[in-house]
Length: 72
Image 1 (cartoon, rainbow, N blue to C red):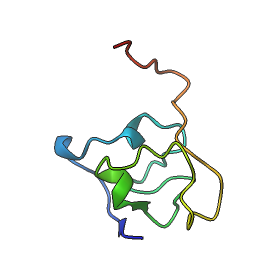
Image 2 (cartoon, rainbow, N blue to C red; image 1 turned 45 degrees about the horizontal axis):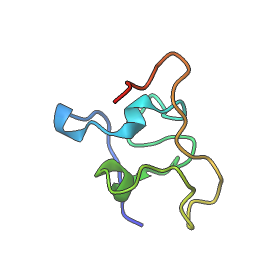
Image 3 (cartoon, one colour; image 1 turned 30 degrees about the vertical axis):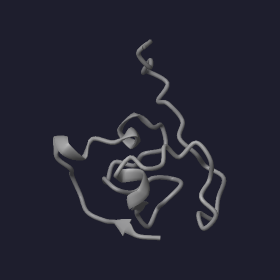
Image 4 (cartoon, rainbow, N blue to C red; image 1 turned 120 degrees about the vertical axis):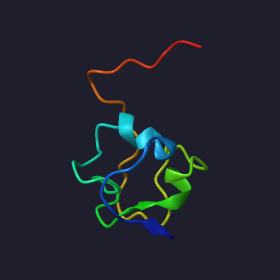
């Protein structure tokens, strides 16, 4: 599993993680992936609706309580 570590991101890196209640203050880590969020999630190939096999916990994407998803 490739991980992307670092702090901050630019507008091109906007990912579903920005809307997730599990994201941590420090970018590219969250409660599900404290060592770094896998690139397949960051590059939008996986919406993290199911735990990854190598994840080690069952935390998945959860919309922040103060946000509403737009109706399309």
